[in-house]
Length: 234
Length: 170
Image: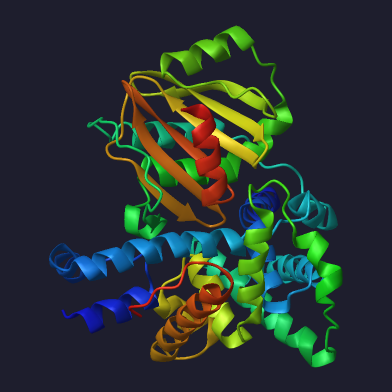
């Protein structure tokens, strides 16, 4: 593959990288720089396309159709999340970088914890928020401290905090209302799931990253919002 | 029992895709009120044609296609008057750190002809491959690839004019 072919493919879809493209990147600094720059620009485009959605749009659609609430399937979905989280066996800290490649769910695989977490948030979180369970601040602070994460204070409120059953222990499902919008945080204290990844699926973006002896998954409406929240946590 | 299952599946679809469909609708019609109407109509038609959905995995593409057809039908009825200035306030997301920079990029995206903007939206927001976009837009894969390439080149050129993101080696 030459530079022309590489750039042609890059412009068609900057998020996809074939083995042939990877080989070309390894030996071509100019194309590697361009790929990084394109990745960053693509993230800006992704964020710009995320125009604000009218509040309670889904509720209005459902109201129109007079649809009842779905059956409770929390444990089934939680179990699949647990199984996916158990896949990761490596843990190491990778520094935050500005020009991260945003992967698609298809590229990462449906069983990756970040992809499963996005599905869990989209499918179950609206109902979980309606349950409006009380938050124990002591337990919550302990969960954050265990992973060495800051509990954001100014301008951030906790909408939901509860245990999230996992293989070999328990994690936590946290929903935060931050200055950058609603963000979900999955705390995984005793397990890690490999290298840091950024994935965009449907209208959500997630970062899954190892941290200390565990890891976390952050999910929000845009890459910018996820990154901004991550800066508050670390 | 079957009705409950249908209701449950329908609500799952609405909660999973209404926001995504709204954004797609917005970027093809560029009017937030029309975009919400399109989402409502899309789900109404999806409910009416529920039996036509054979494969759950195809639901997302099915909804996108319904919305696209519904938009085409609406355009046959009337042309929408788009007042960019009036719509701007509604587009400003004050929760982002740099709302005005984002608006610049949104204006650039809006400046792209729809035939170029739409495959970008389908790829970047919908996560679709070129082949899937070709199916939704009913054009061939080569045309999709060409439009995506040209759209990105145009966006980068526009960005080079208003923001320091110009790349000289393209």
